[in-house]
Image (cartoon, rainbow, N blue to C red; front, side, top):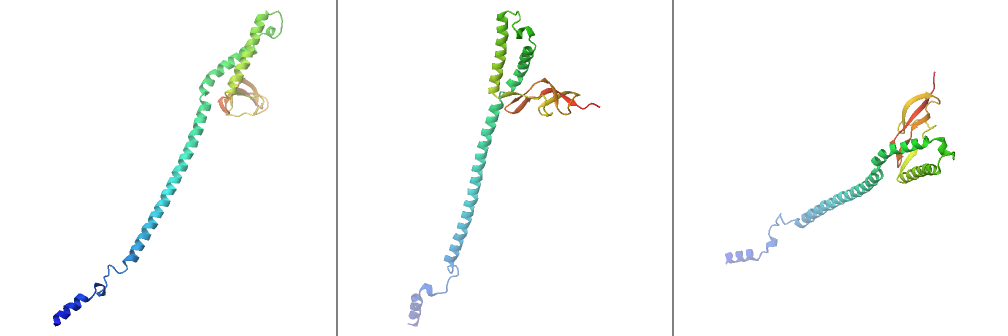
Amino acid sequence: MKEEKKSQNQVQKPVSDSKKDPKTDGEPAQRIEELEQANKELTDQIKRLTEVASRAQAELQNAKIRMEKESTELRKYASATVFINLIPTIDNLQRALKHLPKELEKDGGIPKEFLEWTKGIVVLEQQFLKQVGEMGLRRFESLGKPVDHERHEILMAVPGEAGKVIEVIEDGYELHGKVLRPAKVKVGEEMK
């Protein structure tokens, strides 16, 4: 009977009354701590990824703006080669018109048809210069201006005000403010 009681006592004792298991003791608190740590790590990762995405988006926007600007510049100066090749023709036309005989400037016995033809050439030159001007090509003034090595190619120095353009041998041209061809000039120099 003693054995029977003993076995009943053993059976009747609930499992929870036995020694506490160290593995289960504090497990919920530890699990909460682990979850909080994981949450913090994920939050930090989200923050980093959000920053990376924001930077990438800003870089993309900047690249788009840069490409639009470069495209505009490219379109603006795409005609530069054409104008560089046309400038000598403009020079020759202007030289020819500057050297018209004086008789053509007056009504001095020249056949009217020839006089009208000459005036037509002058109008053609003016129209041509106006049209290329509307496309951005512009002749810039140099006479009497201080020497600018970006805009002036100095061919020789002559007596005159030092550092000033005394004579323009060949006009300079720019396209949308960018020098296409510097003016060929004579520059003043104090003579000793």
